Length: 263
Ligand SMILES: [Zn+2]
Image: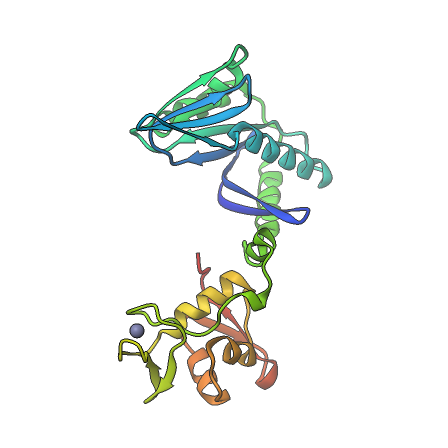
């Protein structure tokens, strides 16, 4: 089973796993780094350095990140009564033009768990050989995937926490799709930009997607009116009745949701 872009709750922040591959014999946390230049994973000093045009830049040590993910999955398995499935990690450099080195006296372990994207399959074969015996039945594997999908919390609201922002810190309104001006006003049943003098019929859709990403994955008529600066409840209702949204509830209690995830 392969799960992409998992956002799992971890205390006050959430943990983001690029790809999680689960087989009956082991789980593999795959962290993908798309970086250019020469990359150095220094296992002795636990440092990660990128060199581009002879300029050095430091980044968070990727091994610490994947080890945190590894621990998290192990804890989750134990907490939900799953067998102690081995959890491994792999750091993949996806930019085919980059070069990387893993240095340090005890770098063998990390070397085996680092690769460029084109040799990913070889590394997976290495893990297949390392863990030949199944721990999970097909049923347990499905149950584990279901649990992870259930725990997957889209990264809404976390941006506020991460950057210490309040709702009132953000500007509201509909951006002009042509010049970016904020906020557009309603005129002739369309969105009108007073800066570039252009009209748009569906500029509010981008605002809605911003709302879903930043605040919550649901919106009411009142919340929508406040966010896009609309006075009329009927106009808001008309705009919210689109094939891109689904709704539940009646009248004042109606809540609208995005039909597909906005990311
Ligand atoms: Zn404009």
